[in-house]
Image (cartoon, rainbow, N blue to C red; front, side, top):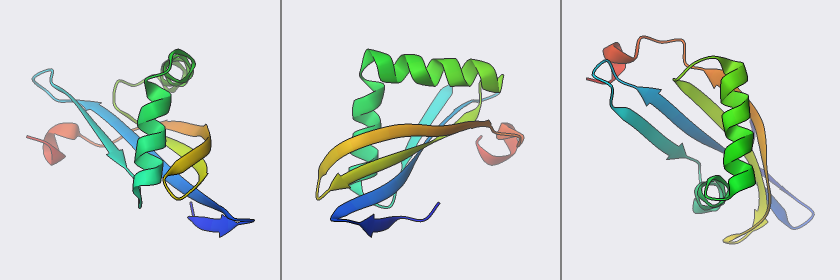
Length: 99
């Protein structure tokens, strides 16, 4: 995904990563090149419809460990639209990258 600007809007691609460690701890990360993407993703996930949409896609994904990608359109620190683009399972052995 390529962050870019178009018609006075910034397009950011934010990732939300969730995985479960071998001892049952649940770890999450919000990752984006700017605050706009992280703030917008966190805001969406605190709203009922945003969380339900993610939960539905996670069920389809079939894994407790996954990465979700969001497209955020905004300007400055203001988000105008946030869309869930995809949810993919993490196919790596978590215990090898997170103790």
